[in-house]
Length: 291
Ligand code: SPV
Ligand code: MG
Image 1 (cartoon, helix red, strand yellow):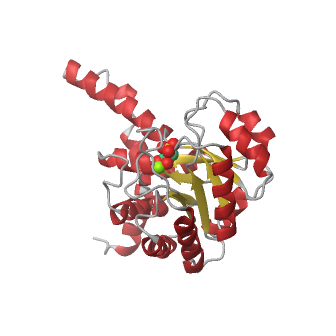
Image 2: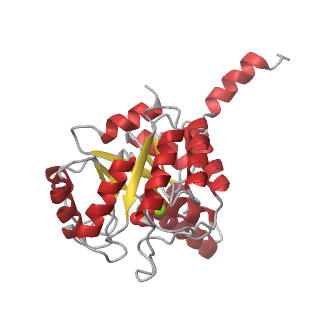
């Protein structure tokens, strides 16, 4: 099945489904091997892995290059965190064209202004996009896709900007009418109150996607009961890798030796396996002249 159709199926599944964050080819492969059916190409994680901030400091073509490696490394679908679409409707529709060429299954755009700021920062400076302008962007993206299963998720940042339920619903419904395939409703509260109030009023007009980074202590069964369709575990591979890299760097620096570090890291054989070195060895036997 096409990656786009796989993602579409996930979003419309009767069961609660999950996307796991990845930020490069290696983490994309690890997510797939763990059993996940889809990948969240997180803007926060991709930018952090590049050593820059989640403020569109990395250009969209630099993000595209990372995605190309991710798409090659994994056979499960990728939903790109497309931030604000990297400009106006024209930039956003060009993004769709380039994503389709790389077999990226869908993109999520958020109703903020370029350059964006991560939703968990600067709570007082999260200006939202004009609704009509954002709807034009969604329409342009949907009109551009050539694969009918390509997914455009519209992310509502009303709660993040400190606006209430009414504004969140007004925006979500406008984005639905503009042609969005699903609504990502975001919240930075540590409880599920905002999400719950939205979902109850929304009544499944379109599938709902959530990112419970801040309300992580909410049991997953609660999401299921509320009828949420898709949960994104948004940044945990990046955060796990930061911890692991810090620990091993500090240990090796301290001990000036690899003796105790060796058993704490993946084997070289595991690195080669993840890189599919076997395939190359076989190809060499086939294509290189035998000596
Ligand atoms: C990301 O992973 O980059 C997201 C989700 O957009 S969040 O950081 O929670 O806003
Ligand atoms: Mg993001």
